[in-house]
Amino acid sequence: MKSTFVIILAVLLLTGCSTPLMKTRGLSEVGSIYGFITNETLEPINSAQVTIAGDNEYITFTNTAGYFILDDLVPGTYNIVVTKGGYEGKNFSASADAGKSNEFNVVMKQMQMAKGKIYGMVVDYISSEPIVVDVLIADLGLTAASDASGHFTFEDLEPKRYLMKFKALNYVTSHIDVMVLSDETVDIMMRMLKAGTVITLEGIEFEFGKAVIKPESSPVLDEAAAILTNHPEIEVEIQGHTDSIGADEANLKLSQKRAEAVREYLIDVHMIEPVRMIPIGYGKTKPIADNATEAGRAKNRRVDFVILEE
Image 1 (cartoon, rainbow, N blue to C red):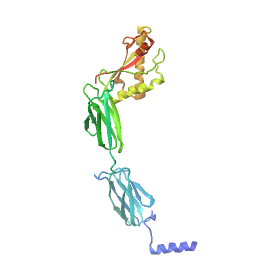
Image 2 (tube, helix red, strand yellow; image 1 turned 180 degrees about the horizontal axis):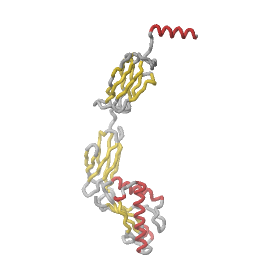
Image 3 (tube, rainbow, N blue to C red; image 1 turned 30 degrees about the vertical axis):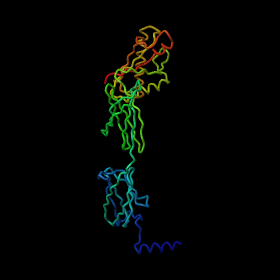
């Protein structure tokens, strides 16, 4: 067996037979293949994978200029495969010559992804009545108007995230980020606010006689944060209110501390800018129900958002 191997090796050396995928690194008679990978507008494509077909050891990646090099190649012809996410794969044949660097440039075609659609409705935050507004996709400069039923549509959108703006007379400008997916329709509902709107944050619970927010209040406070996130231009007055039980001064201090506690939650948990929220305690001076009944007193113990002018 050993003598047979020696004979075969001797024949190969005498005849000069070799295959392109034989590794002969360290020998002087090798070549290299280099080039640039670009898109159809000749912009460089970085991180494209360049591979010699059938040989996983010959893999390289383009740099930020789209440049690649395959070196230490035995002279011969190679089948080279180029791949990059979002682009159609590319095959090409290239020759390596002893002692030379041969250039082969490749232009890759971007895959055409199915486009998506945004379908939405705009309503008044309080009444839920549909409203006519101007809708803008900011990064594309596309505009549309909602119809009398509050509906609007954007079609043929490239799959990506878009910033949308909603503007209407007497309403505070609203914003929302929308992710459009390939060959899908995104449904959105935008509820717009008028300046001066009072929103009672129903469901905020405090420990008795304290300004400590109970954990079960989180969903309500998170919804309040969404109002501020979707309306980045607005400021709000966070109003604290109590019922009529207790001394006036004590109620005033308690309502102030509770309003401040809500503000701190929105700052700490949702990173809302502090300057956009003004906490004011009104004690028992602004009841919305009869303090003579327990049900009425429960309604009066509340926190309100008042939307200020932009």
